[in-house]
Length: 306
Image 1: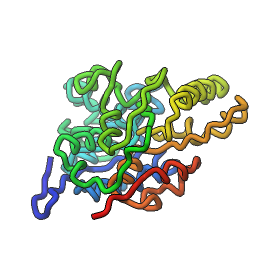
Image 2 (image 1 turned 60 degrees about the vertical axis):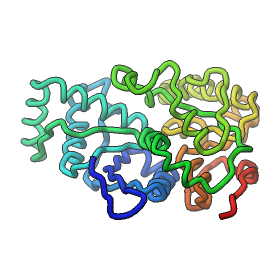
Image 3 (image 1 turned 180 degrees about the vertical axis):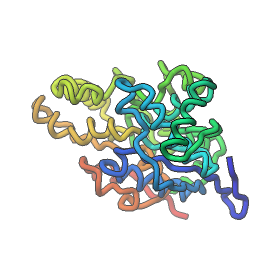
Image 4 (image 1 turned 135 degrees about the vertical axis):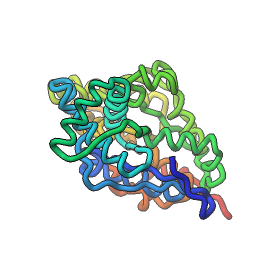
């Protein structure tokens, strides 16, 4: 990890992997992440040549997936910085591929032969892949977040949604936190001053995995969780995965129409919630792009006087 000590707070640099979904369907996630990173002294660098992480073909062409992931890892390695992602599926995909390539010497040799022949790259296996949310959790430990809180969110009750990929692969992430009882997102919510709401089926899948196969089942899975969250009177749901957002926010009106129930539950990416606590204006966090408006929630936030 490369650190700069020129200014205070100390700047830590990461290469940012956006993946496919974030730039197209989750610009507010990227905007808020970059804004929060800048506020906390985290520098996010871009690599224009990054491509898909390989996840979509993982189940049909294992080696093709590994090769796609390895290409991105090789590009990140050339940058010489740790790699951070916003998408949970991208993070899991790159982390799993990275682990497999690092541990299997024969596979690594084969991957490197093909990478060099096709795109002139080599991967030595020296990159660390981390979800942006886990980087923010490290900032809690350093108390950098607490020192910069500028707004009172204590009136907010927020329901965390972890999603399936945030704690997978369990063989790797299980060393970081219990995948059956994760706490990191709850802790991150509490770090903003808001209250983390506990609710039934908290770890249930959003349904996105079956959306293309059976939309009715997918919508029913999302509706079930929205119903449980409404029962706890949460002001919003907070998540860290762009595809989960598609289910809970992008499809919320469709869910309301199909099940004849109204939710109007604001869905925020965690950096948006954190940004509000840091005193950043909602528009600067991309909240105009949120489909379910958080107007009533925002009224409960009190700015602290300096």
